[in-house]
Length: 107
Image (tube, rainbow, N blue to C red; front, side, top):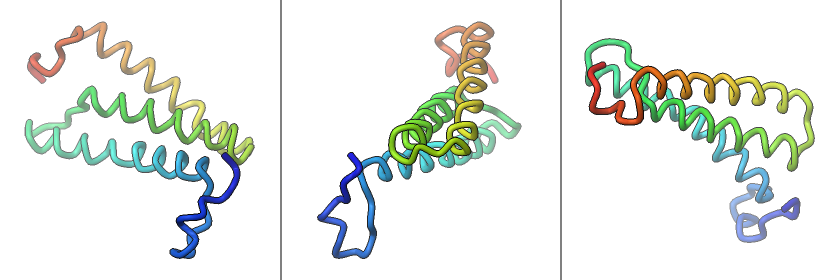
């Protein structure tokens, strides 16, 4: 997974499959704010939808795997390890509080 992807060479982008995992994780982690913005706009008040926590977990784990297996960078590992646990705990609390059918509950 560390070998460069040859079909990207014409673009001038030098990326390995691990780098693609890292990019997708960063996009997922950043995209969660758009989900939160749309939900808050819809309800007219600050709302954190469950998708926010799922995107946080997936994005953190993807970028964490990039830093562990692809780049082996301790700063990136520490930077992405804590948000994954925080998002898992927040998702657990959300499920405990609202149950599995949260979207049908009132915000």
